[in-house]
Image (cartoon, rainbow, N blue to C red; front, side):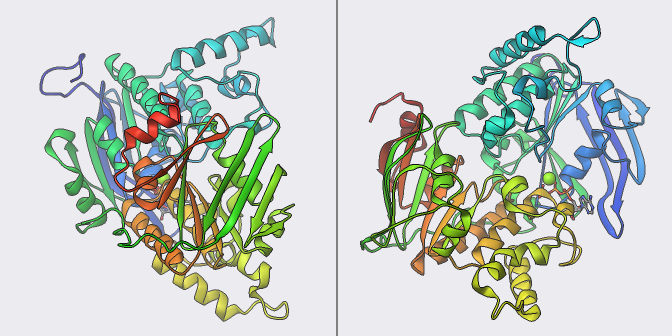
Length: 509
Ligand SMILES: Nc1ncnc2c1ncn2[C@@H]1O[C@H](COP(=O)(O)OP(=O)(O)OP(=O)(O)O)[C@@H](O)[C@H]1O
Ligand SMILES: [Mg+2]
């Protein structure tokens, strides 16, 4: 497939680790990891949440120093004195947790570390020109001067990507770059990755989206419990084999089986009428019944998250929201919670978690703030029980329940966001990218919980850019485009292509 390397597929080793260990106190995150990445290849790291993928990536990016072992760059042993040094040696990175400065513009973020200078001052004109040229070459339609705080998660991921590519490195490390992206943006990224490998560069790629891994990888390394189990060429393996290697058992189904009967038709639990923000949302109308899973799909900037923010009282919008037929005023998240609405956000860093606090505190945060505590007293044993249940149900990997959430792997943090809202037993459960960064086994658990909540009468709204996920989980699907709902579809027998044709506007409703 690749053009620059000999027929057997092996380009020159671009980067190697030899017997690398990494510990954080008592936690052994990496054990004896020897990885060889070749030039002109996309090399994927696969593994459950907490397997050690991001830790390995950060060692290759100069963020962490290995506790033991060596790193070789194009055959020569090297040491990275820090991220800046690794960058200087030709390595650029998109981290799993976004690292942009929210108050700065798209352009300022992309060139944060190498702004064009003239006579010692930043040449703003040149900065904007360079940014526009870079974005255009990538097919990203974003305004260079927009502050990052105005962007959605997916748009921020694209800015991170542009930033990493602005360095013209020989090795690109991507830690879950597509977790908020939908089809067409993923296609764009894969196009870029193909161009880079054709130029002889190497890409290390981490993702929990297995379909995408099978599309883009040349080689796949499976990690488990901090060890590198094996490295396989893509053509010699299958999705089933990879899943079995990763989770240590076979998984017959990726999604719980569908209910035989569609949910009973009752009066809507939630009714949304004429929801609008100036220019950002146009007369959005829909309703959800108890027991129903309503999917919402749309491309970047289609308005999905704006709708959810209005429903959770984060943004005030014109229009009407009714619960059980009664108009309600949702001026703040506290109002929404008082109406038994819960919201799993797509941005765990800003809206979901207190990273410095313990796992226990984060899981119990909403529950005890809103009615869980009898007479204002937090019941320590109830708290411990809720934590234990959540940890075992979703297989959350922590050193102890007292560990700070910020020290957990990305996927484990996301499981905590989910657990914390699940504990509230909401009547209306809004899920915005609930499985972002979560491994295949734990996803199945989350899907099972969603089904159980629905079966118990909860109205679930599932926003996701993962099309197989929304199609498998929703009873009904709304497609959004340009801040409007453009189509409502039943999901039985619905194809990804049909949904995409409405989402992109190839077919008008
Ligand atoms: N700064 C830290 N302090 C303490 N423990 C840490 C730290 N960073 C990572 N760990 C631990 O190291 C292990 C590996 O974490 P890592 O982030 O590499 O996993 P991952 O494979 O990237 O998982 P995910 O798919 O969830 O992103 C986990 O048990 C995690 O809690
Ligand atoms: Mg990770």
